[in-house]
Image (cartoon, rainbow, N blue to C red; front, side, top):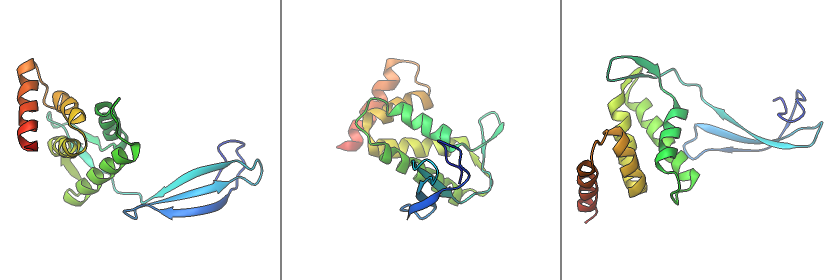
Length: 152
């Protein structure tokens, strides 16, 4: 593994640790040339999963896009990045187990809303407002009332 600091072509593995779901290995490395340490992740390469949009366009599933959307909804909320990463991992794992090659866009949004509803009510309403394209205050109020009713 090439060092990201000095670009030396070798590094030494100091520690390896599997993720909770055993799909990723985290390796802590050290460069023998500059002695700096860095982390790498080894992940199983999966076959591409295509997302079928509402207009029938297809695009490759992007874990990064999913993460950005959830991060945006959780912005300035007291939510640990580890919790957000766990949500993304869970959604990706569920999609890959339920769909082989193509997944409609709707179940992705619904899964995100379900996970955010459990994680943080404000993040949920933020995401729902964009996903469901709220046009007025009444739409927000209905969603909040629904959320409050389900918490009771």
